[in-house]
Amino acid sequence: MKLTLHALMILASLGTSASAGVSVDVDQTLGSSNYRSTRGKISIVLTDSLYLAPYASTYRSDASSGSFNTFGLRGGYETGPFALGVEAGFQPKTNGYKKTFAGADATFSLTPGGSKRGRKMAGPSSEGSETFGAGLAGVDVGGAVRHTRHSDDLYASGPTGAGRRKAGMTRSSIYTVGQTDLSAFAGARFLITEISAEITKSVYDKTLDAATAREAQSLSLSGFSAFIQGFPETSFNAKLRWKTLPLVKPYVSYTHTKFKLGAADSDAYELGGTVGLQMLSVKASAQRYKQKGYADQNFFMLGAGLNF
Image (cartoon, rainbow, N blue to C red):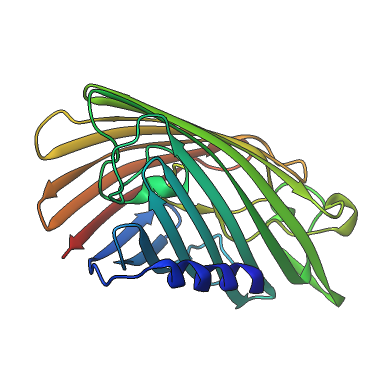
């Protein structure tokens, strides 16, 4: 994590002019089992190529063991067809569980659209509000790596199913496990349609089953707005976006995830859209999460962004 923070400082030193620009985004999600979450991000454009984006989130539900807060910082350097990003953050301890994380990613556009920073079609750089590229078609490809260090003071309350999700007895020593996520992603655009896909493989430095580990208490899946629980093994996301009207961009997203600790596979669906009003953008989505052994969950998200 120290290396990643150092890399963010190096990125900042690359900027030579104060080409200012700021965007602020806030999302609120409500759902099943009294689920509620809030995400906020401020993106500061330092130059035509460099930006910094601090962010924070919080969530809780009747099924969670408390309110889980996350704080992070992302820095990016984009020029021509290349986009490079680094990120680091942490989640303070809640009911015995905490984590830290750091990562990096790179995206290459096969149809460069100039040096102006803009949103990519896939990967971590796809979350901005602008469109990258020019002409009728474009292709983005890239990869990412992220390392997460989980720490837990508590055993799981049982060896399988819901018991892995709930807290049991206090451990005599803190349990830690490292998770490394390796991702590959690609996106393509033709006329009014964008299609993107991302696949992630997660590897761990310890055997989770042997440690009577609880599931990770806060997990964010690619292409899905709500937080869930679990240690993922592989995850695949596919997303379609359209520009049907000058101001409206609807999208549909599907994520399939395989988990560790004997948990059943999950399917996550999200249908939403964004309305752009120059400085202001408004977005909304409906989501459904299905995992065998648990009741299906429904979520609704409403958010807004301001660019100035």
